[in-house]
Length: 347
Image 1 (cartoon, rainbow, N blue to C red):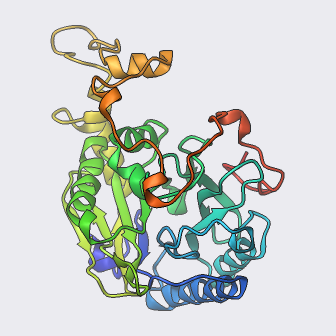
Image 2: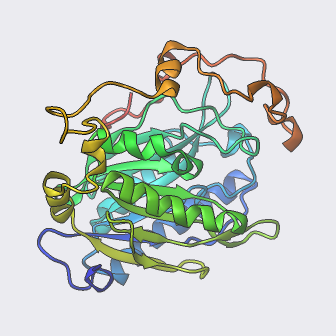
């Protein structure tokens, strides 16, 4: 059930378009400006393509490509021209948008950041990727947690980026904060295809959430991104799925009202509730302790794998990056001077 891709929108529905954007090559500030214009043009295509669409989602690396280039001249700021253009495009075409930027960080490596902008140009959600795809990516680990925002037509949205979705704790955290639709943007290439599909489905079912996920698409002459836009129902089934055609916009209608009904009405497999109410048939309210050693150890600062000392890849030197010399300073370092005045979900 996807309303024929959103053609038949219900009063309670949220229609989302996932853009399998052609993978660009970005080497100069002029390239960055041209790609910004292209993304804004695709916002217009999304609106013309489907008048019922509420939200158009662009993949990770849509603006910067897969070069992993950290030169300041091709990085973005929340108050810079690229984000201003995205905000203006959402206003012009009366549509919400989800965008990817590599964000300047005066204190270290750039952040891999995502934005959800509403149809009035307001930044409703601002997220920095918590789990860069090591050892390949050089981005600073995110320090803003997993924000959730009010989305179109009364929905609740979260955004996780690429490798974030391989860690079940990420989707669970989004759900715990109230997310009903979990967006996942990525730049993945073909070797990850199987893991991409099963984690999108698992993140949906394990959390009784809709997942809407999309990768970059096509070749830049070196890498081949896979597209693979994918909507999953909260029971884990696939609602709609794209292939490998660049610039295709794959759409579906999602129904948060039915999701809310399941979250409150299901007995069997009501996973988010039953996680913290173990065995409620036997004991009143269920057990509400934390039996998970890894959670206890992580909070206590003593998390350590049994095979920790045998792990061979522990930095990015094998991918050409110098070994880091800075320690992570944590969320207290989350407030850059250009942190997007007038935004929701921003520091």
